[in-house]
Amino acid sequence: NFNLRPTGNLLFQGSASLVNDFGRRNLSQDYVLSWTASSKLSASASASLAGLEGGSRSDRYSAQLQYSLTPRSSLVVSYSQYDLSSASGSSASSLQAGFRTGF
Image (tube, rainbow, N blue to C red; front, side, top):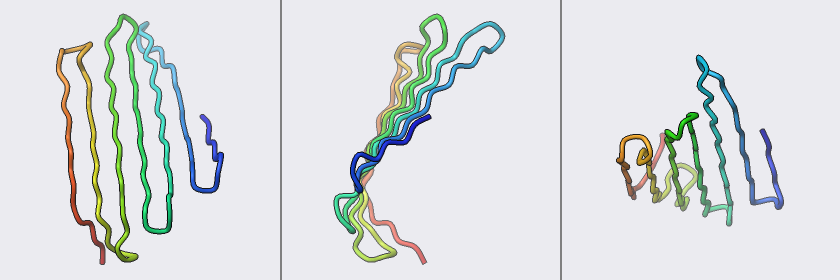
């Protein structure tokens, strides 16, 4: 596991684990990059990579951009991709945009 903060508004985190499950090795890796551009604008990206011995993989990627309008509401755009192409030949992507608020 690691946490790197090269500047006050940039953070890079990551972790990796290797699990031996009934003789099959599973390597999982997670990474997150966060950037706070200002008190109102922030962005983040993440990757979760998992692979089984023998070539089967399951990878997830995402990115998010958030602009705060008030302390309790913001505009959000996010993209995510889930890739199972090495295992089943399929993948899925999602793009969302919206207004988020809390009470």
